[in-house]
Amino acid sequence: MSLSPYPYILCLFSLLMAGSAMAQDIFYNKVAGPLLQAPEAESPMVEFLLQGELLYPLQKEEGGFVFLENQSGRRGWFAKKELSEQAVRPQYRCFLSNLRLRSQGNLQAAVVAKLQEGQLVRFTGRRSPNKERISVRGQKLPHYWLEVETAKGLIAWTYGGGLEKLVPIPTIPGNLEQEEPPKQGPSSKGDTLSMHLELPHSSKVRQAESLFLWWNALSPEWKAFYNQMVLLKPLEEAYSEASLAEIEQIMRLEELDLSQDDACQTGPFYAVALKDLSGLRGLPLLKRLHGRGLQLERLAGLNQLSSLEELSFTELKLKQLLFLPKKLKKLRLDFAQEQQFPLSLLRGQGQLEELTIRAQKVQDMQVFIQLPKLKKLSLQISDLRSISGVNSLFMLEELRLEAGQSDLDLRPLAALSRLKKLYVLADELQNINSIANLRQLQALEINVKANRIDARLLSRFQQLRWLKLSTPELLEGESLGELKALVFFACQQDLPFSIQQLPGQLQQLELGAPSFQQLERLGQFPELISLDLRAAAWPAMGAFVAPPNLAKFYLRASNLASLQQLPPMSQLRLLDLSQCPELEEIGALAQLKQLELLYLPKSISLQSEAVQAIYHPGLTIRHEVLSACF
Image (tube, rainbow, N blue to C red; front, side):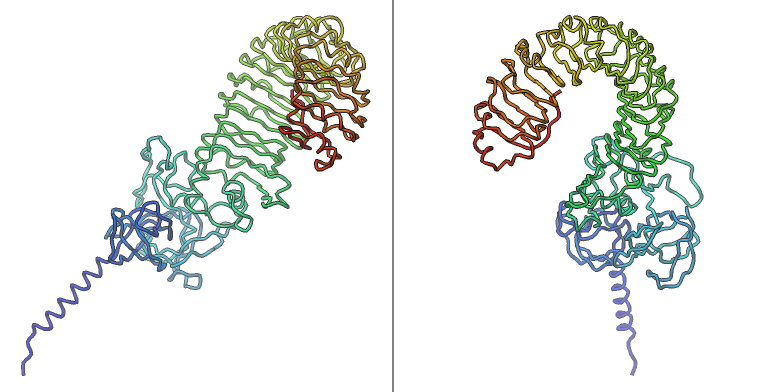
């Protein structure tokens, strides 16, 4: 009996057709992106897909999306236009030395070869089902095992955390700037790409995969900082991973404060000890950076903040300062310990407009000639020997000199024709008459311990509106009464002078240790709206004659126990008694029906009957200690 060959041919043909159909049931994603829960662009993410992953379609399409299963067994939707039937095989670069290649995707598999730093491999599309945490450069980084092919054709598995994706640098989502094409650089054999992104430290970053690489490279301390202080996650999620949307939120930061209060140690946050600024690499839009009480080993990370315009670190503990970011407009460095600041670091800061330095010593004052746009300068230097370079700052409008125990020669100030505000605190001053030509001064503070100064100097400044003195010689004579533009005056020390010397148009007044006669003469200032009085021994309130338009009154008297009688103050809106620790009797405050804000010492309970007795609708009563309104 002969058998016909046709059934066998038909069967073989069917198997070939089935095999062909199965081969077409494999897709690769052309771009990295999220596998979505629903066929919608804004749908939540099931899992993030690396570029070129092997995907299995589940014969379901909707709205331009295909329903897929990835190698983790997770199912979701992906845009059909971003899928390819051909392997994508993206290129990666090894950034570690001796990165092991294994026969399978796990640590127990045999090592078949090793990759060296800089070697290029291609991703075949196959990866491990789940992320694993493996130590890379001392950090536990989560990533997949990836199957890769080397330049010699070896196909093996390696840990993805030791590789970095080679991608062009695009723009941040939402950035209105046009995307710039990648610049062409020198090419090498086997390397067809012109550029790679190690971390997103460029000013333009959009690739989601690059953002995850950046996040994975952060130290645990920086992850905890961003999670708590920026993303506002609860305590139990301080060291959790961030989603794509959360990383993009960090990338869009324009201002960041690194300060962490001591209360964080017992409050809802961990106080994370940041030892360096490496976590700032990659914030392309960051313009303003602040920090208080930081203990840093170095400032590495600042040099990659290309958009940074304002840098302010106070109470800074830093072992060594070697460089500063360029293109700054505002710079404030306040060192907690005695440290010398080399002004030579300011070379190249041609855009700097405001500079504040607090340190033990400074060097290279002549560098100021390279700061042509500087308008505001504050030098709080305990051992300031000379200000010879200041005379080159022709655009300077505000200058503060706090020299501690130093003896300053003020002759360089004579060249500052645009100076409007001058504050000088020193032990002694030489050639103070050099400032006589600064006729445009509008604010002046002089606090000198020992000096011989001619009181007639003040009469030169007819545009002066703000004056604070702690020097007896300047309080003598009639020069103060000649300042017809003056609206603010302060003398907080116990110095002998009569307030009758002050011009009658004053609006704000600070007096330390006022005498009885001075209190009785406060009525001579009909335009006074704000008054700050400080006294160790306070007389009866009846001796106080309130100006008719007084709206804010700050009283600091350590021995004041009661307010039995108050002068008429019909315009008073704010009263600060928080610095009167002995105060007990406050019944007289009930007559201030127009009062809107009252500050009491902490010794008086806000729930006490005495407080309830003086309360009226519209009045806010607090314990906070205010600084003066000036």
